[in-house]
Amino acid sequence: MEICSNQRGGSSITWFFRDRGFDDKSIHEMFKKCKRLEGVERERASENWDYLKSIGIQERKLPSIVSKCPKILALGLHEKLVPMVECLSTLGTKPQEVASAIAKFPPILSHSVEEKLCPLLAFFQALGVPEKQLGRMILLNPRLISYSIELKLTQIVDFLAAIGLARDGMIAKVLAKNPFIMGYSVDKRLRPTSDFLKSVGLTEQDLQTVAMNFPEVLCRDVNKVLRPNFAYLKRCGFGDGQIASLITGFPPVLIKSIQNSLEPRIRFLVEVMGRRIDEVTDYPDFFRHGLKKRLELRHKLLKKKNIACSLSEMLDCNQKKFLMKFGFFEGHA
Image 1 (cartoon, rainbow, N blue to C red):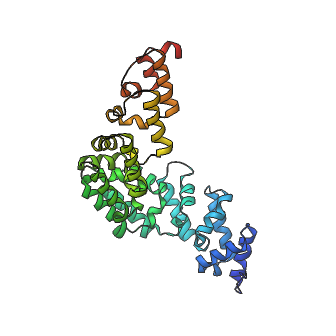
Image 2 (image 1 turned 120 degrees about the horizontal axis):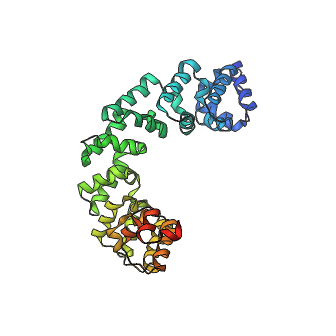
Image 3 (image 1 turned 90 degrees about the vertical axis):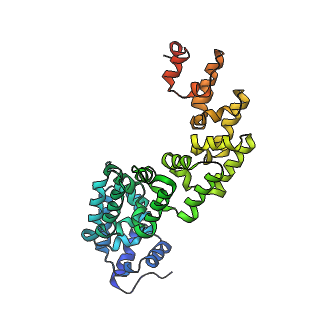
C-alpha cells in the first residue's frame, strides 16, 4: 500500500507514525480520516504528541487516541489543545480526569472552547446544574461537547419536562446523575421506554421516581431488555400490579441480568429461604443485595438461631446493626 505523499510534510508525518509503531494500514486509515495530515510537519506532530504525554496520557494509549482522532496532530498546540485542556482542568477535581476524558473521546480536543464548551456549560448552568457537578458531567461523558444544544440537548430537556420533571431543578438532577442519557434519541429510546413503563402500570408519579432515581432504566432498549425482564417476572408468578410495585420500588429490576442476578436471587428466596415470592413485593430492594455477601450469609446466621423475620428486617441495615439486632454481636466482634 503506497502511503508516502510527494509533499515533504506528508512524507515526514508518515515517518513520524512509523517511528511510533503504526503499521501502514493504520497510517492509511488516518490519512483517509484527516486530509490535513498530509500537510502536517513532523515537528508539529511531535510537539502535540509530547504535550498529550505531559498532561498524563500514557504513551501506550496515544496510538489508539490518535487513530480515533488523527486531527489532534494537525491542530495548533497553543491555539487549540492548550486552551481546551486548561479549561477542562478547571472542571476536574482529580489529577487524571482530563487525561481520562480525552482517552474516552479524543475529538473533544478539536472543539472550540468559545464556540462549544462555554455555551454547553452555560446551557447546563441555566438548567440549575450545580457548578461542582458540571465538570463531572463533561469529564464523565466528554461526548456531550459534540451534541447540538438546539437539535439534541433541548429535546432531551423538553422530554423530561413533559414527563413531569420541570420543577425544583429535577431535570438538572437527572442529567447530573446520568450524563449519558443525553446521548439517546427521544423518539427511538426515551419515549418508547416511558410509554412501556406506563403500559405496565406505572403512574406518572412512579415514572418520575424512576427517572429521578435510576435514569439509566429509561436508556435501555424496550424489546431487548425491559420486556424480557417483565416477562420473566410474570413467569415467576408476580401479578401486573406487583411488578409495577417492584419497578417503582427498585427500577433496576427491569435492567438486571435475568441469568446472573434475578434468577439466582429468586431461586434462593424460594428454594433455600423457603419464603413466598410475594414477600419481595413488600421489599423490592431485595434485588439490590449481594447474593453471597448479604443474602446467603445472613440467612445462614438466622437459620442457626431459628429466627423468623421479614426481608426488610433481615436486610435493611448494615452488618453491625444486623448482628446487634439479632444477638450475634458477641460471636462476631
